[in-house]
Length: 224
Image 1 (cartoon, rainbow, N blue to C red):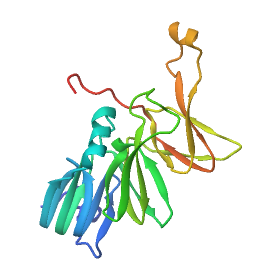
Image 2 (image 1 turned 90 degrees about the vertical axis):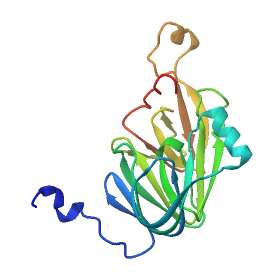
Image 3 (image 1 turned 180 degrees about the horizontal axis):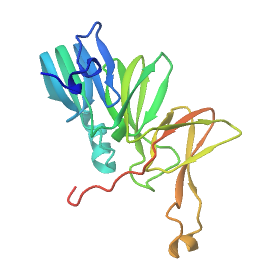
């Protein structure tokens, strides 16, 4: 049988070491030898002796997620084998954490991560309850994190001289040490008259970077 679909770049080769690698631009391969964590529903294939189990987040974390809609429902993958993760053909990236690194990520952009990383849902400081969903996932420790992005991301440096303002629906993540606040770019009167549709942004101050995607969040389907 002959087809371009059988080209070498499409074939899944046996893993040479535990952990995650990019299978291709839209998929992460994870060679499990123990445990990893991933968003529920992200598994597209696996081989080997693996078990998949819904991951509890503790009463406090679950309550935050239920109230805020932050929406990072996790599963644990345990055993020995290989598993492939993807989500709606979004672009995949792997972030390596060294000791002392910390990254704030929107829950919708988390694909999978090493169990050695610490994970916590936190409210974005300065955002209050305005804008909804400004509760993000903060990762720290040592290990690897698989991130997804709809479209090609833009990484913007943040410096004390140049704060960055981002649409809350487009932000993927930012350096955890940055200071956050909400910035209102329109007056209340302008908003009442229709405005530009870009009334409030997340302001980031300090030294670091912010990752944004070239699209805003799609509205949830009716009934969700």
